Amino acid sequence: MPATLFAIGKMRFAPYRAAADEYLRRIKHYMPLQEVELKSELSPKLSELQIREKESRQIMAQVAQGSHLFVLDERGKLMSSMQFAQVIEGLMAQSIPMAFAIGGAFGHHDVLRQRANIVFGLSPLTFPHELARVLVYEQIYRAMTIIKKEPYHK
Image (cartoon, rainbow, N blue to C red; front, side):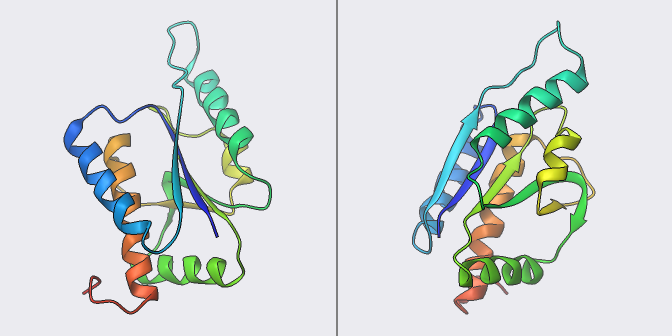
């Protein structure tokens, strides 16, 4: 059951990249997880809405058909780590591939939110996109340790 995380833009801040790589290494013990970085469409010639739409369509074009799409959005549903683990476990039991989407500076367009199976937030707070990626990886890792009943989640 593969999983893919789609993110607009590259991770440039070395400490975040190191943390993300550490969690990716840990996650791969449990399941394959691929990271796909997509081009930011930031341009002074485009409106925020146009940028959101172009970036969201980029993500949609990459998400495999039949994948359960988690779209991260600051206005999305908040879940506990236990609830998130239950969703992941259910998808794994059904062998449904998972895709996670982290938008660019202006977030996601409604076209992607409508395609999503779950629109969820990490917190009511807004995080830099690079840090949000680290947090998602940490929560995926935490979910796997919950599912496997390992001691990480306390």
